[in-house]
Picture 1 (cartoon, one colour):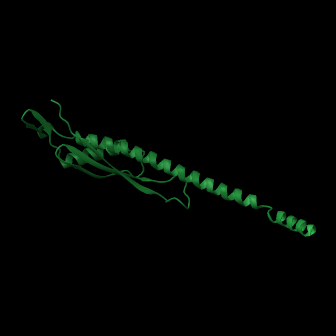
Picture 2: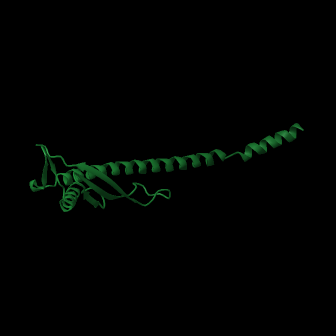
Picture 3: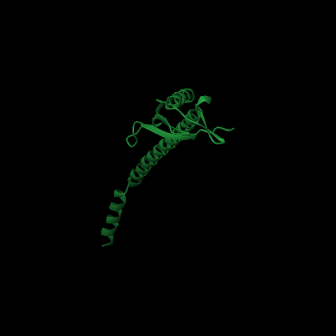
Length: 152
C-alpha cells in the first residue's frame, strides 16, 4: 500500500512541473495589458486638459470680441452685446494660433448670448500604444464659456 502511495505521489509531482510557468506568463500578460491601459488613459486625460486650455482661451477671446459701438448703457451700467460672427471669428483665430500641437483641432461651434460666449473645440486623440483592447483613436470635444465684462 505504501508503495502505491509513493508511486502516486511521484506521478502527481511530475504532473505539476511547469504549471508555475503558465501562471507567470498569464500574470505578465495581464500586467502588460494593465500598463498599456493606464498609459492610454493618462494620455487621454492630458490631451483633454490641453484641449480645455485651448477652449478656455478661445472662449475668452470670443467674449472680448466686441466693438465700442456694441456697448449698451442700462442706467448706470455698461454691458457689451456680442455678435455671433465676431465670436466665431475670434474663437477660430485663437484656436488656430494656440492649438498648433493638437492633432485635427477644429472649432465645432461658437455662439453668443447677451453677455457670454460658448465655444466647443475638438481634436483627435490616439493612444500611445495601440492594442487589441484600446480603440485606434477618439475625437475629444470640450465646451467652455466665458462672460464679457465691461468695466467703467
